[in-house]
Image (cartoon, rainbow, N blue to C red; front, side, top):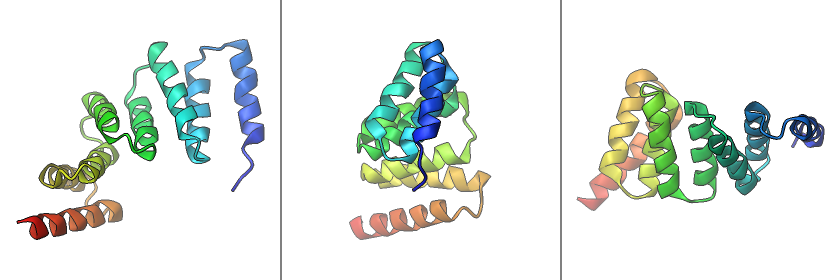
Length: 141
């Protein structure tokens, strides 16, 4: 694993000058995501939202942190916000399918995997997710 202390030091210096710098907060949150400090990442993403930054990437990253914390219902809410801002993003659609799969809402999950595949036809993760969901649907009916 890379040493992220220098990167975090830089963000801390920027934030000591401008504690509400949205991009420094979001990027520091991304570093926390990378190193598995999900709760801290989530706090930073929430701070960005409170301070007025509202873009699909931020909601997507927040959903990633929530998913890693196994807070699937909240993650789904964040992805819905992300989809409102960027409705044809294959990554967001895939992640919504993934979370719906985790929530055992297989039919809905399949719908979102299929939407993602219409945009990104050969995505391996989406194809594998679709295969898992079809197997669950078959086993449950």
